[in-house]
Image (cartoon, rainbow, N blue to C red):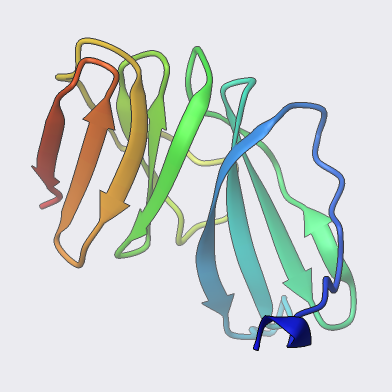
Length: 140
């Protein structure tokens, strides 16, 4: 029943359009940090913005990741990694199990135009582009 849904919180973005959001899952508490839920957002300005939610502090911003030279259209999450797709024709892989800002682990090239969307399975990433091509990637 859709009538039972309610908005719990609105998070004001960082000044640029948000094109995609992906859950990074939950982190268990440690001696230094309480349990949290993390999400990442793809942005018009080429950045990936991450947010954390803890019961005590609520939502907080974490450092932004300068991901691409152009619009980030899509994000995927696979095995502790974030995969980003961009207008710059590139797909990049990021170590999401660590706190942002992240260092790019790998850049995947092969599309002839903007990479618009991603689909993630347990072992593969599918990317689709304005060039009309669908690519299947295996992260090893």
